[in-house]
Image 1 (cartoon, rainbow, N blue to C red):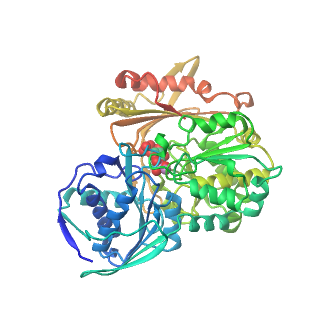
Image 2: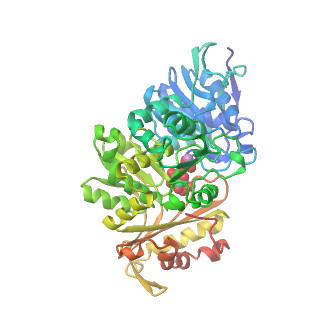
Image 3: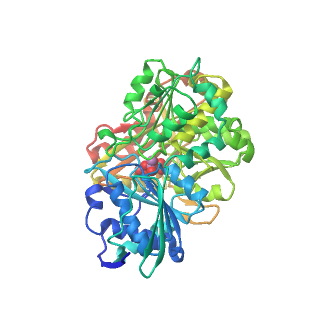
Amino acid sequence: VRVERVQTQPFEGQKPGTSGLRKGVPVFQQPNYTENFVQATLVAGLGDKIRGSTLVVGGDGRFFLEDAVQIIIRLAAANGVSKLIIGQKGVLSTPAVSCMIRKYQTNGGIILTASHNPGGPNADFGIKFNCANGGPAPEGVTNAIFEVTKTITEYPTCPELKTDLTAIGKHSYEIDGVGQFHVDVVDSVEDYVNLMKQIFDFNALRELVGGGNSLKVLINSMHGVTGPYVRRIFVQELGAPESCCVNTDTLNDFGGCHPDPNLTYAADLVEAMKKGEHGFGAAFDGDGDRNMILGQNAFFVTPNDSLAVLANNLECIPYFQRTGVKGFARSMPTAGAVDRVAKAKGKECFEVPTGWKFFGNLMDAGRLSLCGEESFGTGSDHIREKDGVWAVLAWLSVIKYKKKSVKQILMDHWHQYGRNFFTRYDYENCESAPAQKMMDILENFIKDTHSVGRKFTDCGKTYIVAKADNFSYTDPIDNSVSTKQGIRIIFTDDSRIIFRLSGTGSSGATIRLYVEGYEQNPETFEQDAQVVLKPLINIALQLSELQKLTGRAAPTVIT
Ligand code: VG1
Ligand code: CO
C-alpha cells in the first residue's frame, strides 16, 4: 500500500476540553481538519512508541463515525502503527474501549464521541485519546496534542487504504517502506460483557430481574451506543423481557434527541416510570458512560446520592469482595454525600477537578475503588472511564442484597448520614463575552479580602461566607497542578455555591451553577431540592449578576 505525505496548515482551536476535542460535524468535515488532529494525537499521544504500537478505536455510532475511523486507519498505517482493534462498524462504547485497552494491553485508544452532545450532520462530533491505562489522557498529554496542532505542516497517509468494517474479521496490509499493518474488526460487546460477568453475580441478578415475580426494570438507551450492550446483558444474559429495554437501536443522530440521561432530556423514561409499573429505571448517554437511576414512580436518585449509596454497600459486589475497598473520590462540584460514607468507613476520599481524567492516577496507585461526578457519572477501578451499564448492575446488586426498594434504600441512607441537597443549573450556549464577564465578577469576589465573613440573607435564611476561591488541584501521585477549576463559595454551614464554564460545548459558553446544602432533619428529607436550596440559588444569581449579564431569566436545564 502506497504512503503519501500531505501538506497541511494548522487549524485554530484544536484544543481538547474536559473530554476530548468536540466540534460541529461540518468543522470535522473540512479538508485536513480531522487528519491534523489525528496526526497530532498519534504523535503527542504515543511519542516514540508510535512505530509498532497497538490502539483500540471505536465510537458511539454518531454521524461521521465511519469516515473518522477510515481516516484513523489511513494515518495509523502510514505512521507505522502496527495494529488497530476496531469495533464492528466502528462502534464501541466508551467503557468498552477502556476495557479493551486494558485487556489487550494496548498503547492506548481513540474514542470517537461527543458523548451527551446531540449527533447528526449538523450536530457534534468528537475525538478523544486514552492512554495505556485505559483512561482519558491527562492534561500533560492533551496540552502536548494541542501544541502539535499549532505547528503541523504535513501528515503521512495511505490514500488508497480502506477497511471493510461491516463484518468481524482480521485484515493485514503491507505498507510501503513501513511494514506490516493489521486491522482486527471485533465484536463490539463481547469483551465488555465478559468483564461484567467477572465483576457481578449474574446468577443473583438473574433471580432479581429475570421473569416471574421479579423486579420490573425499564432501561432506556436513548438511541445511543448502549443498545446492543443492554440487550445482550439484560435480555440474553439476565433473562429480562425484551420490553424492559427501549430505544436500543443506535441511530447516528440519536433520533434527533439530546442523548443525555437527566430529568429533562430523558423525559420519556421519567413519564414511563411515573406510571408505577416498574420498580427500577435507568438511562444512558450517547457513548454509554453516564447513567441516571430512578425508582418506582420516577423517584429520582441524584448522582451524588447514587455514589454515596454504592460506596456504602460495595461489599455486596463480588469484584470488591476480591479487591477490597480502597478509597473513594468525587469531582469538586459533586455534593459531599460520599465524603460522609468515607468518614464512617475510615476510607480516604479525594476531591478532584471536573473530568474523569483526574481519577486515573489514584486508581493506578491503588488508592481509589469508586468515584463519581454530579453529571451522572459513576464508575470504579475495573476500567478507567465512568461506566453507565456498570452503575446499573451495581445498583441492582445493592437492591438484591438489601431486598429494599430504591426509595427505601435512599431513605435509610439519609437517616444514617443526613441528606446533601444538590442542584445544577445549566445556561447552555450563552455568548462568550458576558459569560467571561460574570466569571471576572466572581473572580473579584474571591480576591476581595472582605468576602470571607460576609453575610447573605434570602427567604429568611442567612449564610456567612467561610471560604471563597478558585479550585486548584495538586495530583497526589504525580504532583501535577491544575488551576482555575471552578469558583467556590463555601459557607459556614458547609453549603456551597460553585460556578464554572463547561469544557465540552462546541460553541459559545455554557455556564454551570452548582448549589449544595446539607440537612440532618428527617422532616426535610422528602422535600424538593429546588425548594430547600432556593435561598442559596437566589444568592448565587444575585452575587454573579448572571441574569443581567446573560439575559437569561431561567436555565436551559436543571438537574
Ligand atoms: C461535563 C461534565 C463532567 C464530565 C464531562 C464529560 O463537562 O460536567 O462532569 O466529566 O462532561 O462527560 P463540562 O466541562 O461540560 O462541565 V461525557 O459523558 O460528556 O464525556
Ligand atoms: Co458520555
